[in-house]
Length: 577
Image 1 (cartoon, helix red, strand yellow):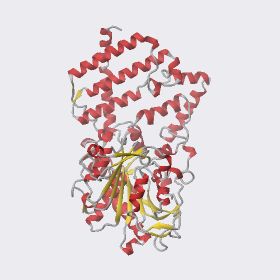
Image 2: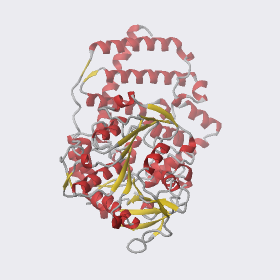
Image 3: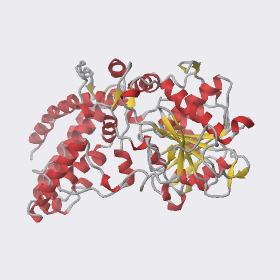
Image 4: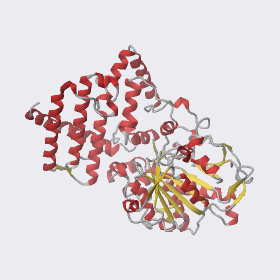
């Protein structure tokens, strides 16, 4: 390939690049809950592609780099070594020179297209959207995704005399019937049988949630009970997958009388449920129930509370509402990967703008449901190679069945959201970021001021979290007014949180002077890395706020208004979206 041919190929790439922007832009704008409907706006006008230009100097450098790499690749010809990418790491790619060459050419084009997005002269949000669009387009167009180009799948088809293709077709038909790509063998799990198995009972329920109380494992418990509020966009048993990685069981083992909110999977009967309902009938009602069951309401005592992800946003709002009413029922609060200040929202920001939120308000703000399958698809496409195309290749091209994995079973167990609640959440948090501004929003008749939360707070963020970026989790330290402790864990949104000490995995970072500079980067400069799970640090912190040891209860509930309704994990968690 001479320099002129390489430049001609470089220029030809602008066509696919523009197509990537056109195709991907609509996805980036509408994917948040719309992927299950083909990425359409349901009749609404597609948002305009923004105007932008390229930095000439950077573009010229990219072109020169492409010419050099393409020339080198062409000179290597069919002797090109296998690309260092796990999508092309199988023996079939190494044994097929043409396939290895096509993979190398694809990766070169992908690098070049992504470099071109960096050369765009535009605001940060537009650049992020362009990058997201191109990443989606490149992930979808990889040669590994197509049987005609996937040398490994072809090799397997020959070895199995076509049986792998037949199994792939069966897998495809199965997934079409169930409505989503299989990430695990879902038949291997059953809620209450081999996930969510910690012993307990439902002691209260209303139209929004069931309250589960767990059986103590010893003769003594701490005086102040612990209430866990999980996210309502997923099911609570992420906190109780297996006995050896269950945060619920761990809390019980530490001597806490433990309660968990199990949110109902909304159906049409909850289509008009609001954010206020989730605060008043959800979190606040759960707090009062735990107070009453433990007798803390009569003694004027308090409980400890924990919120995870959106559950933490709900819990923080509830505590601010109660504080506005002059009520402070919590002795301490723990926030796990929680956003209260929505300034740093990571990749999710590419989906949010005024047009998108207004469309959602028109579509379901006065009633309706946000389908759980659409939400699940959106979050999967945040990591398309790992959570989408990896399974497309394995399930359909190779005819493989994914192995049982409890975390991926939970990930596939989708939940709906009430439209009015979802629309309020989008506008007041992700779009306008008003929840953290003093008295900027009214919830349950009260002006919300998170600064009124003046109780001890334990704030956790995961270093590689793409849902709640570490900077967003850290921002909570700038909002609360009580004593705080911040800890950063390794890994991501789930693996960083669910990290039992016995596994001796990962690390966590602490700053012993408990000072909180403006940014997370400044905090990290004075932090120290500690091996292993953050759970042990949280255990020591929580025990200081848990009160004295008292006799463990002999029965669930309090024997009067709150009694065992059914065994844990209850009915609500078993309802499918």
